[in-house]
Length: 165
Image (cartoon, rainbow, N blue to C red; front, side, top):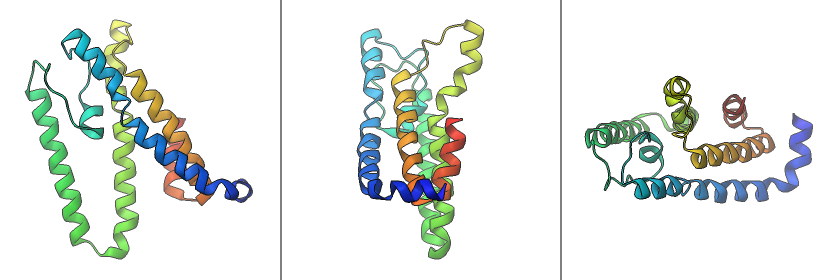
């Protein structure tokens, strides 16, 4: 692994920049799903979790408001808890622990579509899987895995490797 890292060192800045740009582009992958919601005028069968975790929620066509408010309140609570933790914890420990927390949260966010697997298998219909979000998440994960290998960053390598397996 170290020889691979050494051979990729000349590309470190390029890979990091591309991964950053593609990550920002990934935030817009939900626009395709928003377009579908707008066309259908309904959100039936579409999980709100990818939107709550990654971008501002558009709720104009949401029929059940509690499906938006409850996860939003949980998200705000989690963010408040993380900021409180960062202010309270010893700065020498925050980088490692916060990195672990954020990595786990990103894995959960990217795996959110998998929460629908049971229903998909029962109905034998995968049309509810948000393909643009899943594809963008996979592509971004691959870029960050490559960047993690270049940096020999254990969080990025182990977590992202487990994600794509």
